[in-house]
Image (cartoon, rainbow, N blue to C red; front, side, top):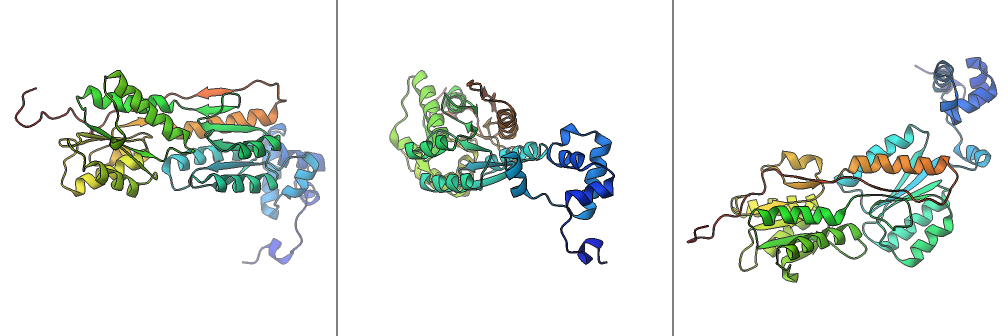
Amino acid sequence: MVSENMLNPRKPTLIDIARESGASLATVSRALAQPELVKADTLERIRTVANRLGYVPNRKARALVSGRSHTIGVVVPTLNSPIFSACLQDMQRSFAEQGYQLLIASHEYDMTNETAALTQLLSHGVDGLILVGAARPPATWALIEGARIPLVQMWEGQAHLDCVRVDNHRAGYLVAQHLLELGHRDIGVICGYQKNNDRQSMRLEGVRAAFEQAGLSLARGQISEQPVSIGAGRTGCATLLQLVPPLTAIIGTADLLAIGAMVEAQGRGIAIPADLSIAGIDNVDFAAHLAPSLTTVDIPAEAIGRETAALMLRRLSQADNGTVEALELPISLVTRHSTARRAPKSGTVE
């Protein structure tokens, strides 16, 4: 069936909506730009007419009038990650409720790519920037500061800038402490690359702190740096399984690495956790549904997305008074079935 809009190719305007809805032009403009200022029944009537006419706001025109694009630029390390996907999903929902759209880019842990992405986002006139972590070159920070728009950091951040973070150091400490309390001493770590990744470096430092508290040291040979993926977790596990004496436990400083280690170990006939305990950090959705289910540290990715959006919206609606908001969300150890007390060595009684 051919619609009225298809027969009339002229783009509908605010005047058309005002005429059809019986509202004033000023009310229609307000309803589409600042819906919170319009009565619910009037807003519903205007939106119904706008949808029927196929009205699409001209963002460029709105930006010229308001000085805002109603877009927020977000740069994450990778889109191939359940933890960042969960964060972005809740963030997008929060912004959409207030009439903002996310422009999302990823840099795949390459700082040159991040700078290029930031340049593109700024050229689109985004109203604010959201970034992951604080580890980046001075030239990139100069670009960000020169934009003079609100910035919110996630996961980690510089102390003098707004941030929604978690204690990544404690995450590493908790998972290592758990294994140490189960009697494990021969523990290997598969971690993400440390360069320009303060989340991974802080988690590894937390593991070291737990070792030192127990009177142990974490040797370089007990650490395998890898890209954060399941395949890389398998590679890291294969490397660590060559160590002598053999490991009794492996930590993945991201769940994807721990899951990869589990797949590799099980493929070699190693029973988990009877022969090898494995634990991760993140608590991705499917961690609870593996066999065995994965012990991990819960990082509230969805809450990070929501709180980051809320903080950015506050910055956009308030005059900058020079104060810094730093919100730290709680984390917790989630003990499941992939870890167990270290089995006694053959021929010994413990």
